[in-house]
Image 1 (cartoon, rainbow, N blue to C red):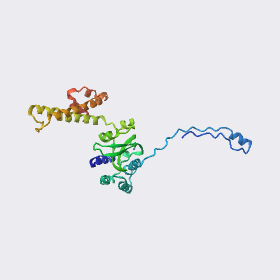
Image 2: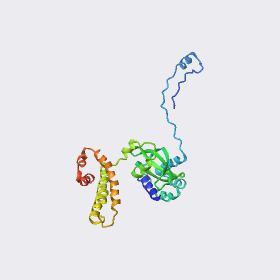
Image 3: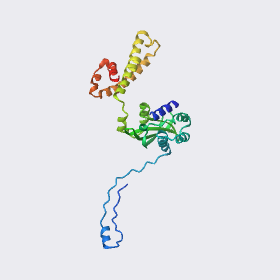
Image 4: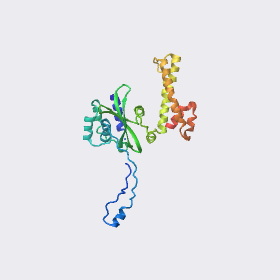
Length: 276
């Protein structure tokens, strides 16, 4: 769990009616002139209905306090008190290490609001309550943060900068992911192509085809070690499933990447040109 807490902390710091009615009844008149004035119906503008504020649970209040006091705040004593009162005991030492770090203004989650909370269990079966908070971060008006809480004590938090962890927890919520958030967090083409380059060279070529080729000729891996070829083939098949996702991404790139789309066998070399 400490590993997850560390990841959450890094991410957290590198890194959320009715219409007005006309008074149609005149006041008792003091004079005929007054009666004439009051008897005219007054026009009042119609106001748009306003949504009632969301009533927060105790757990949701803790999540919002985490954002306002610990993530966005600069008051050291307030942060210390928050850790003592609202952070899970096992996680407190790690939060204390980070309490002196002030979040840069463009990474603060301003005007945070709780959208939803759900029960969530991680891969080890630990049950927590996950609270989805949305706010303004930099140029993204709908940035999202998820705070994981156990018995009203914060364990850790994650946002979309940790794509794998955030996506896994985010899928537990019914609230749809806002388009603005998706666009703001989309990686730059050069970063995505670098990821694909590593995938092709390392996962597919070196750990897949090269090792299998060496096993066929020498009975060992490319480094001379023993290997389970059946397992390697199985892992390669799973690795190749991701190729469809990458193929789709490359196909959607602009015209400046046309040569990459047609590169065929020279795929890794041309990727290097585009990623530097």
